[in-house]
Amino acid sequence: MRSPLRVLLLVPMATVCLLCACAPIPDDGSALPTGASAHNSTVTDDLDAPWSIAFHGSTALVSERDSARVLEIGAGGTHREVGVIAGVAPSGEGGLLGLAIRERHLFAYYTTAEDNRIERFDLTGEPGSLGISGGTPILTGLPAATNHNGGRIAFGPDAMLYATVGDAGDRPGAQDRANLAGKILRMTPDGQPPADNPFPDSLVYSYGHRNPQGLAWSPDGRMFASEFGQNTWDELNLIEPGGNYGWPEVEGIADRPGFLDPVQQWSPAQASPSGMTITDTAIYLANLRGQRLREIPLDDLTGSTEHLVREYGRLRDVVRAPDGTLWVLTNNTDGRGNPTTGDDRIVRLDHAN
Image 1 (spheres, rainbow, N blue to C red):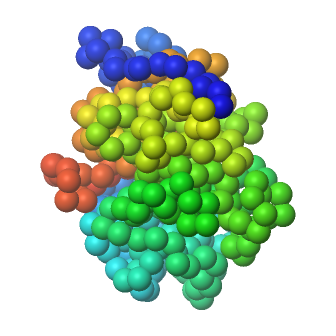
Image 2: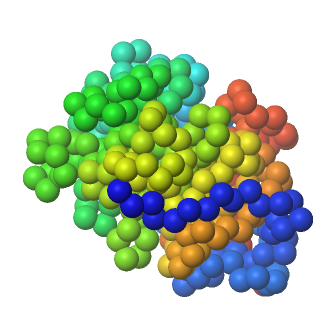
């Protein structure tokens, strides 16, 4: 099988581009222009182990992993509780994880005492007074553990729901297509396998993953995913239907027949990539251990520029807001960070006046 691009990227600190020297994304989605002036602002703070941001129109909803709360972010930095997801059993890396929104429905990926699952809720009310009601499980029985739960969900340009599932400690399961551990899944909004999935009557879209936590699509429809490696390489993968990404047989770029190599890789100390978003020109990737926001040009998947390096600590998610700015979610209160006053928070990368 092909090896799309081969690059070992460890950017020296001397080349790191701190955000104070880089401007944020204009509303047209172009990349951060080099040398332009910019500033950051806090959207909201005092969040408790937040995990995911999803927009309902212009209103942001945030999941908190351990409290199982869904929060609505209001004007002036306020946030209010939309609801608490019943049945969440936080343990280690498990809890209330990814959120996705489609029309008037909220989809949540979460850990129970027995499994990981995806549930659909009705969104009620209007911005400023949103609520959730009902609750229909659309996929249950996903493998769960204290780590490697995956947890990112997102609707693709095809209106299908995609979900990242970690290996949950079952390393061989990642290579077994009958096992949902270590997979990226594709399903209808009701949790059924679409007829055009790569394997008949299966939700499996790609396999051989360890702990993928980021999903996003480029304007031309290419699908990318970020993935935590073990001790050697974290990955950015270009996802192909039915592709085998190697875990646990290989980690990072291996150039071995039968496996698809990442388009870029980093040492875990410089990365630990989680949520991601894509603009018209670049991929933006939030990193936990690496404590930085990485920008990867879509026209050069071997390139990389770093922002916010160690300015805000661990970064869990990044999304493009409806106004074109980037919202970056910190993750210092999850038991692995060093929270400062006000953590955790959402930081917005704004235009300079």
